[in-house]
Image (tube, rainbow, N blue to C red; front, side, top):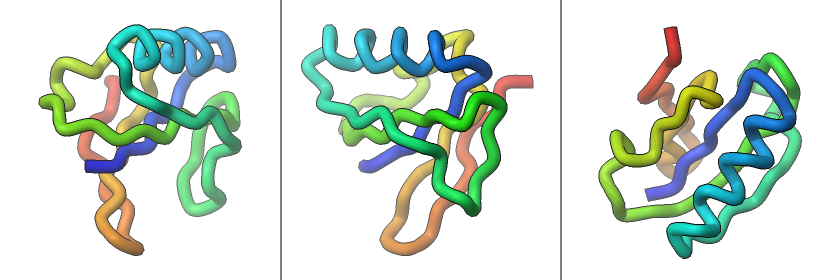
Length: 78
């Protein structure tokens, strides 16, 4: 599965990229796609077969599942 995580801060995005790297999950830090909104404008795109519940940190604003050309919100930090 492929995901996009948005963050409250640039620091949170960088920290999350390092977290994914420590779990041997490749990721790409990039600008948030226009159709999504974000507090800091930076997101992390990654692929994993792990349960996404194990991938949530307090730095994450939202997580989206990329399903072909569709992007679905699957988690929101409230």
